[in-house]
Amino acid sequence: MRPSLLMLCGAFAFAVMGAFTHAAAKHYDWQVIALTRSILAMMIAGLLAVKAKTPMVFLRPWTLWVRSIAGSLSVMCNFYALSRLPIADALTLTNMFPVWIAVLSWPVLGRFPERDVWFGVLCGVMGVAVMQQPYLVEGNLGTLAAVTGSVTSAVALIGLHRLGHIAPNAIVFHFSAVSVLVVLATMFVVPPEQALALQLTAVWPAPAYLLGVGIFATLGQLLLTRAFAAGAPARISVIGLTQVGFAMIFDVMFWNRSLQIHSLLGMFLVIVPTVWLMLHRDSRNSTNG
Image (tube, rainbow, N blue to C red; front, side, top):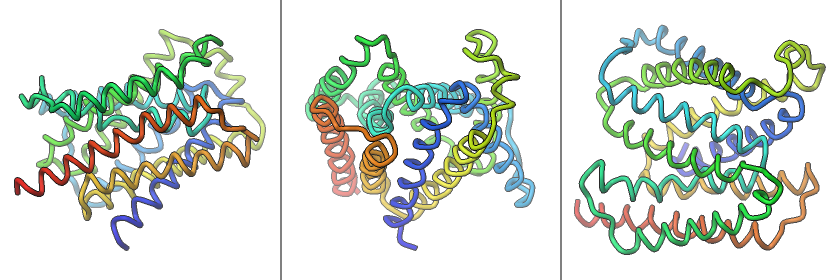
């Protein structure tokens, strides 16, 4: 299967995951949803590692811990956002990590961002401001969580770039295990709004929503991994943004959402510079190569 088609299927899977998360949020707190997703991913990665006899890593290198901790924070922020915002809005903001990767390349990699990067950051921040205004008025912090999740995703991906010598199964297992611990710790610091016992006894179809989150999150991750292994990363990332389009369809179909001007304008201001930075960086790398 072509890398572009793999990523398109992966984007659809992530959008479905977002829909299940949004539906599950009526029955479960975001911590429970994030914990379920992390446990399932850890189990699958562990089984694949055992089957392939993959050597596991735990204490070193330190970059692995940076990737796992940043990724865990991203998981929590993203699921909080998906439980509080329309799916399309949440996925737009959580997928602006290429902008932050370009900015973080200065302190981390010693590459001073070019003018187009700063322009992209300015557009992205303007888009966030436009999208978050009505939610902040309501006391909804979902947009801030989504942006924070995109920043921590950027840190995690920069760390992942330096772990090419470690088997993917081992990296995913370590990340998922750390994520389980981080989410559990968060549940003690910020207790769920509903009693945990009450959430665990939720009636059907609530458990199906939770299971759907885990299944489609794992499916999306597997498809994404295969797509990035076989295709040009920047162009594959652009195709990944189609999940925003799928999410908009789900918002309208299942939640009867009428798309507001502020959301559409904000999405435009976030997505356009993100696509530009990915494609521009890819063409520049090809020229240098």
